Image (cartoon, rainbow, N blue to C red; front, side, top):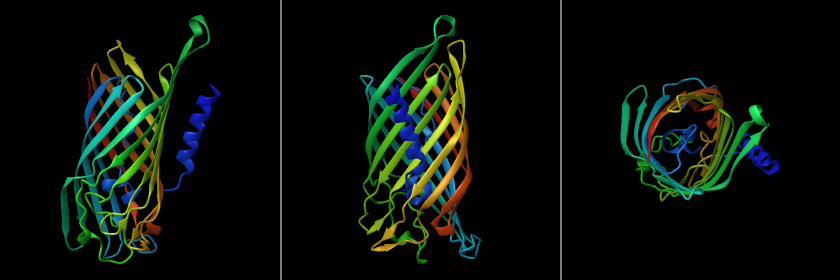
Amino acid sequence: MKRLVLAAALLAATTMTSNACDICGCGAGSYYIGILPEFNAKILGLRYRSSNLTTHLNPNGERTYLTTDEQYYTTELWGGWTIKDRYRIMASVPLAVNIKDNETARERKTGLSDVSVQGFYRVLRSKTTLGKHDKARLLVQDLWVGVGVKAPTGKYNPADKSTISATTNSFQLGTGSWDFLFTGMYDIRLLDIGFNATASYKINTTNPYDYYYGNRFSGSAQLYHKFRFDNKFMIAPNLGINIESSRKDIDGSTAVRATGGRLMFATAGAEMSFEKVSIGGNWQAVVNQNLGEGAVKAGNRAMLHVSFMF
């Protein structure tokens, strides 16, 4: 029990303190997925995410004639396969629609973004009965750790990098680099009340155009309650936080000023399942941010998914 509590505490601490989000959590850099549906064998689903950025703000965070509004809409085909209850493979194939508006024009990009694959190992799975007889309560805990890779399948166009010095290079379908993911997922549930936490660190590499997106950390924590009806239908509302932190990008040998920073969201959502189908979504409202030394501001986000278990 002490080891389980320690693992949870370490994961929560990592969520709060690690320092490293390529593309400020938008475009090819966003990986927040909320609480995953429960599945014991195979799962296949579609996930839709929307996010936005305002860039080229002045030093006081105010709009200027250079200010640009960027919207990112991503639809992912994703799946998972659990093998012998201890191993899990998960993959995501995202299609992106990016839209950029400024005072003079609108630009749109559509296409494949960066594909990712992760392998997970279940470090622990425990079921403990607390109390006795009619006061007995079942405590369930899960801890997964994983590593993965993100491939440069999305188009990176060096000509689309902003011509304005020291600004974010966010408007790309992909980063153009091979990057590596390290993830932990912890869940603890007493009867139908639970706590879920995830933490992920992404180590990026320099792309062929000598541009390096800063390493990115993301973490989330949610409380949820499962309401079951006739053992067929389940709905689980949830509340929590999502944190992202990124180091600055490097263009050649120069740190890009309007990149890197920290971002925090309050999240609210729900997961529903009926037999082999799961539907869910959440809303993520910005509560605190410091991106690109004030030259960049992130907006609220949304995520929806539908998944099928096999």
